[in-house]
Image 1 (cartoon, rainbow, N blue to C red):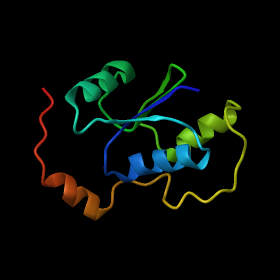
Image 2: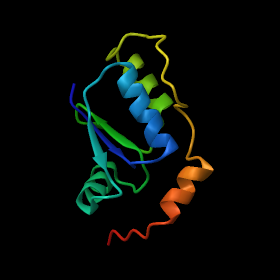
Image 3: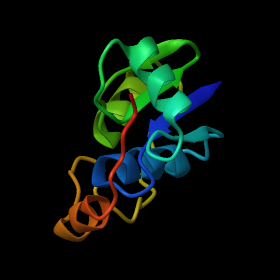
Length: 111
């Protein structure tokens, strides 16, 4: 399976996606859309929208997806087997107040 995960370095949704991918021990490219303009532009081009996280699994783009939605996709398409392994973080939650504060200290301009 080839997985490209377009994620923010610090974000509840992005951390949920990472947790699900790690739960199933899946190799993935963790693509930083905050620190790399070209990666953000690629995500927007491929997904057709600007929201993250976006995860491309074998050429199929899952746009603005939570970890829970990603897990449901993987299970329903028999890409992984069910697992009761703990993930250690919420898989369907936004950023905490601390994460929002951290991101607010940076001015980011993509275009």
